[in-house]
Length: 533
Image (cartoon, rainbow, N blue to C red; front, top):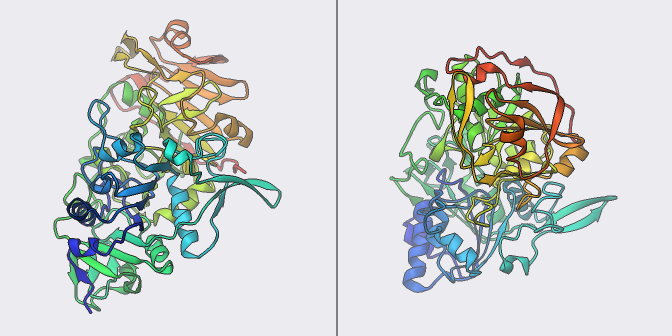
């Protein structure tokens, strides 16, 4: 019997009360046609109702016009567990899923992406759940928020502290989905799936196993269907024995903003000269200073924000390939991309399944992570997951908590405060108008990263801004470098909402950072950092 169905026929197979797991990362690998058909069925029939929806990484674009918003109708979802969420611009109406969360129409949890994949893996193996130290002393911890995003979630805790073998752990239950909705490039008639035109595989295999072993079904959206027996077995990432339904969607986008780019899928390598370099401005100063923290031979994780421009700094300095970039969606090497293509890389050396990448991150197997911040607390804690002015409406933490839990070295980057107007002139930073919102605060609005735990574990933590470099030292946040043109008292200490210490050997940031020409940057030779317990 043929496995090929229309999107509407596939949607008709989802029963009321089902737990559905969706393999996507924003616009990357989003099975949008199937999700759209599910939403259309609900609007027409009022079914399926009462779903639990699982998204290790956000499904759909940041504006909420795709992915999870197709199924975010009132009554359709009762519970949602997501590593991240579409946030939408802060000056516009929230995406539909956020309207449901804020209205308490469903219970919503922000669980670290790697832990969600772990929960699916444990469900597939019929084990009792996940024991982990990832997230302790952060919003993930039940002693703080327990991942709950609203009151409906707080009434139904999803994580608890337990004692095992003389240690305290966080325990998350296993997830056993009734339906897995995944996406690939090609399916043969037997349902074997290949990903040759994709920029990742994410957790397709893990989701398919979890659904199959739980007695559920697997729906695979693909661009094209091939004759049985014509796919090379080494190319098949999900075997047909796990796939029940194939939905052909010839117009599926490679990413939210990309119909198809062969460099994203590793079918073509772009010349380095084709990548746009960052404009010379204070943000580039920050990215350059972050690059100075790296060493040759390191494996370096990179996150969204200013630090995403660091690979372009290395290209500009003739240092491409001296470090290997690793991102949570699975790309290893190459050049991580920006904006709506974030999560993809051009010219990658390898694509690792996201659950494996997160295992690498959770255990601190890599050398350094470059990440952003919304707020920095006086104890060194960082908030990336809740905007101070709008308590929700952010993308959530995604893989941030997994990545930072045992990272040996972390470099956070961002502007010193929000709303400041600045420019560069004659090698100096000129502050034209001071910002109104302090980003260094007595206590962060949500603990995405615990400074207290970082110090206890011996993690090396640096915060790079346009006007100073701050390090987390035993006494607290300590200013170690300041930009030329900046007054320590007026522009830094008086503008910080939380206490800052000043290093006795305070020095000026490297003058080359503030000149438009390349810096002639030299990376230190890689040295192994101490492991974090």
